Image 1 (cartoon, one colour):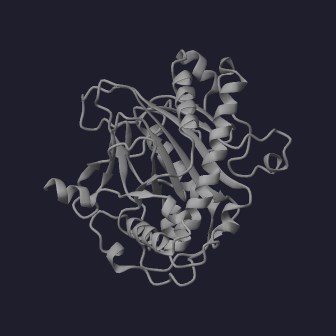
Image 2 (cartoon, rainbow, N blue to C red; image 1 turned 180 degrees about the horizontal axis):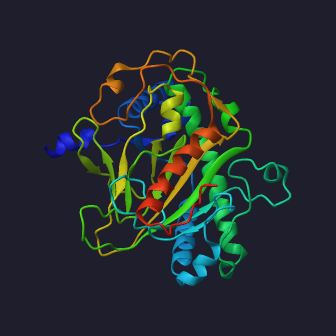
Length: 349
């Protein structure tokens, strides 16, 4: 494939100022490009998003500070049963790609920091609880993470409005899903340099994200690859400084009845350099019931026929809660790692 053909298959880089513009032509051009990217690729990169570069610099510094700690310190904040999906996971805890080796990454999961006596925590609502992190990092470390978490929450809500407009449904259609107690996870991830010892080695195995949308801030090392669903080839997504790689998850694909797609991607880090990435997973109100959006009942044939797409049932989707949808997918990914390496903790409860 020539360089021009390869570029045409890559996720586009979109300028978010077009959506915010009062110029109707610019906004329409942005929405047309956004809709095309969501239908064909499920991925795009977003510039001029409004997140301050200084905040991005500080969250990367916080990530490097965490992962430079001795393993015994990080393990004091271990992600395990009863931690509400918060805490540290070590290399090999997760296997996202069936048939590969467990993922060669370490990470920490953070979310909205709710005290143990908060009503949502007492009710056992999905993903609700206090953050768990090594105490030696101090409160300022956590404050930086929560400042970034809030900035990502705000951006995710605005991106959801753009996604609605690109579907030709009311711009505020998703507001009832985004404005009330949204479920979101900030994940700091470190991929150490990995020697190419096996074809099964992955920094992060090939998978589709589980939730609604993901906003990924990556460093300059590279390694993220997106699959071309016509050929099966994995294409490198070169980092754009300061940009967010935005991708749609399985929840959004199901909700839109596959008018928007969730695409397969992976991370390989065979360089001699540590790679750091900061994904923000946004899945809205966990108590919300997903039903096909009115007007999207007819499933696109191009998606159902694609060679490398997931198995899409012929029958219409029934209603399902966000909680049930997400929990089942997390259970499967951690079960694969546990089956491969039985001492992996079960962090899905």
